[in-house]
Amino acid sequence: MMKLYWAMPQGIKKHYQHELELYETEFVQRHLQQAWRHLERAHILAQPWPREHSYVHWRMLCFGFFIKSPKEVLGQITRLVFGGVKSFVGKIPIGNTGGANVPPLKPMEIPTDLREILKGTGED
Image (cartoon, rainbow, N blue to C red; front, side, top):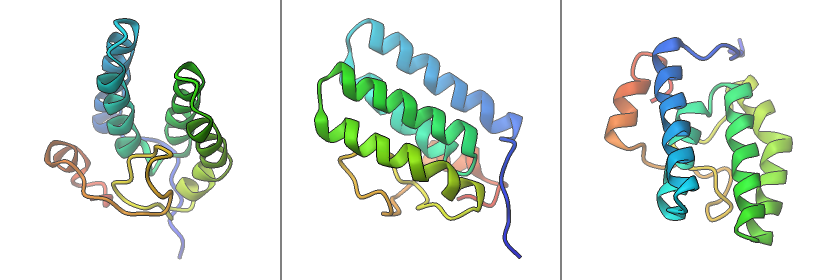
């Protein structure tokens, strides 16, 4: 039976939201590398949940426009179209950081602190 994902658990959601807040802080200070890193971390946390996953890709798309990167913009448009659907049916490349600089279906190592946050959800 296929597992469907919809509601992000609150224990993970607070960390996801914190990464987005850190992104905003770094972005407004124009610390773009650090800002992007927080989007990647939010992406890792959000992958199994379609709404949050798609939202991170939306933020990545906006970031791509801001830095004037055609590669990032095109990569994020593609991910916006397919990422949420993949999340909904539980078919995601675990640990993928979500940027156009990595293949969209490539599983990646999850940072230790994020692995601890995801423990117990079946996503690590």
